[in-house]
Image (cartoon, rainbow, N blue to C red; front, top):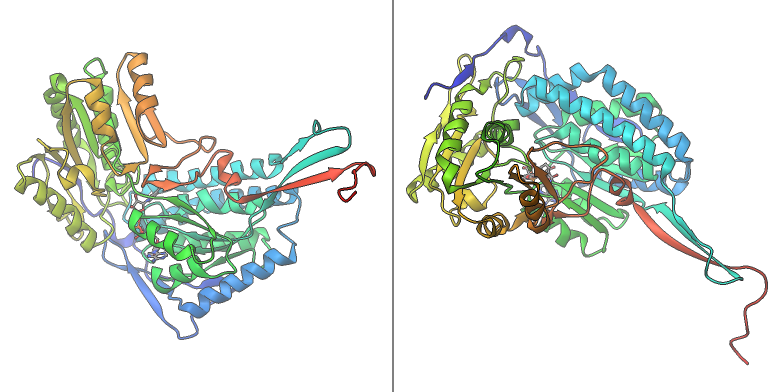
Length: 507
Ligand code: NAD
């Protein structure tokens, strides 16, 4: 270990005495699977059992879809007023705030992320419920009053119907809150499948929806795996839309599965996000943002800034600064409020991260810091050291594929055109960043880079008001902002003749 800042196990006594029991929420009832199947989640950091979840088969997934379909078609929610929907969403936001400590703790125990970050995620989630409530009351269509004296055109926005919301493990509460309140604001009904690794906080959210008075069947939660639950949610003809966040590979499978019924698919997928640093940038600020970008959520983040493209003249100076900061990033026990980097989600994923680093070294890259798993005092070895890999060539897998760990790759450039070509040389197009004190350089980059979000002289800020989503193989559709609700709306055109002025077609 190379002078890293490690936070050992803080207080084993605060670990849960028993795992949380989690059930499906179908048609307003909390139920086990009919065959009694369950799956256990152990804390990636502490190794103890933290939840036992019912594990659904096809029957539970189909029952949840039936409940959502019946609730939608009955119209109680789908035809309710924006005011009533907003009132409920605001109540949910209040309840999330009330329970945020408990929700954050369960998020830490299942995901391994640091407690301060989990808390911020839950608070950010509550903010999304408030924002969606505002959209529920302000969403509207159009009217066309200039189609001629006897014609009026209306463009109505209607809820798309029953939506399947399939979520990943890396930001379980935030991501379900990027989807569900917007779907509900639109008047849709939903079936949610959280990741099998992190089901707890979605079930806790279900409890809050029930407490807030959401009618039975409007939201349903099915716990289980991609096979069969995700597959049923993507293929069943009673589902009108699938909103998926996860890996690009599974996103492609869902798109193919959904094609048989031509349901709408919106996808938030992976990224290999470049940050380009010009010589006139404030290198201290850039170095700090680079450390944040790559170590936030242990790099298990679609927006991870894992690909640094730095001008040759400042590459050495910048790398030294990032290495120095990386030694100071506290990682270890995620229940300790000092910790900024927690555990890796699973041993298999840790091995995958390490494989990218070893592969790069074998291909001629150099490890400037870290480069391996680490046993943290009093905890297991499911931690990966903050790692910086230099002398990376653009064609190496570490430079082109999503590593999803605390691993930074450093590439260099000489000209702006070269930097943009390198930035765009990826199958992904989720986010990108540029660091320069020249606003023209920043704007030129922002306009030419292929990415759904561009940060200039900053990294990974996010706002409910601003849409988020990917170009290329990072996805299709957008979440947040006005688009967040538009995704869940159908458009209907109504053409109205005023008076009996229509000329006869048949002479
Ligand atoms: P994953 O694709 O393995 O799983 C995501 C969800 O899909 C899980 O609930 C899983 O059970 C389910 N699933 C698996 N196979 C399925 C199938 N055949 N049909 C339907 N559902 C299926 O992703 P993950 O490992 O949980 O999450 C990490 C990935 O998510 C990364 O690639 C990351 O970049 C991406 N991500 C993207 C965003 C974004 O907004 N763009 C945000 C967070 C995470």
